[in-house]
Image (cartoon, rainbow, N blue to C red; front, side, top):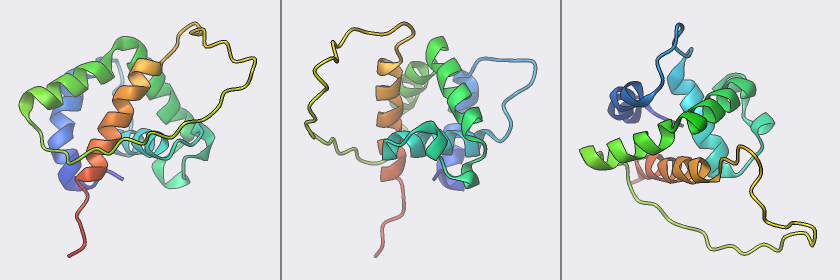
Length: 132
């Protein structure tokens, strides 16, 4: 999902925003590609293809970074530096909720962070080379 040119533009920004830990995440490019793939396709975590590594690693990184506010900082940094990631198209699909869906936020709700990741996924997808 993230090619080498896209990763070269994003890598310094990701390292500036991510929380510092004793052991850095393994194969961060592949893990971020898995997160972007999941949000671009609207799939469940377990549906992430094997080529992106273990699904649980991508889910764990996403949740930890969402709680730490990394995605918001990354988006702000990308916009501040003017990194050109492409165009974004929004889908206005309307779906009915179940009658028992009250709409109350659950504890640890990650909706704002998921929105940020979806925007980043759209920007990265726009960077893909277009057929001539």
